Length: 422
Image (cartoon, rainbow, N blue to C red; front, side, top):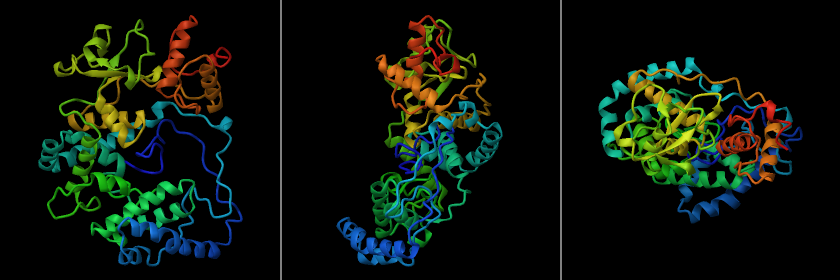
């Protein structure tokens, strides 16, 4: 969900790197006196929010319509009622990260691909116009549509105003949600949607593309020509808005998202990352080949590609294009972007799973990975975020350390390394 609040880097964001068992604790037992907190909420709307909204061009009429009957939604996660302490994460030492392969449910991918192929055919004329306008292939757009909202079938039962107002008033990220709430009010002010039909997810993401309100204001387009962008009920508007998002984030027309490859043992796996891009022809000269046996497209040979080994040597290996990182702008996760790429290939050409198997990795405790990261940082390595999750900087730092210490680089943490990296 682009610009989405729940999930990480504000653009739909990295909740998908690995499945982490770090759930937030429930609201404090006191949970304050709820009637009293509701009164504080109403005072906050009139005394705090309304002046900010007025400065943003929101009329009193819109404010009244938006907040008619709105109360707090106490069932949302990540709430911090006034006077209570923010919820704490469970002890990281008890949390394991899952193998990246767990993200790729074959049953789910097959189901999405089958439905996606049918819908790609149904909307083929619209998708051709969208690709002509924005340069984004129809299968990529349909894959994101399917992943985000089940092709528009997912239930979005929440009042977006209520969700955003509740979180702007009492969550751990109040400022961010206030900005999204103001953006939602701007949508109402300009007549794009009325408060009653502005439905979204528990995180405030809207419609079939799952845009946060700020993303709606930037990227939503009217593609069916009825005078307003309707990402709830208009499939052409929803699909075109996804494509417009990707175009504005830098999608390169005429290029694929990436290729599953075989990387020879002599080629270090510690060369991955968007900051180590080089022409795909240069990767090919090292002996890297497409696992399908096909040649790299001629148009790609002079263009940049990047190595990606999400499970190190224990899983599928890739050379990806800059478009892979554009997909990550929609959701800042390597696994999400790979999911979209694979699903798009299935929709477009009937492709199947990645050919290389996912190894049984990811059984370590986060605290163990965290200790490795801290040890590598102390040795001068850049591991990115020191958070117990093996992102690409951690993976390649591990590979570099392994090579320098006489070990075969695997570029992924495993229990055998726990006592060695100190």
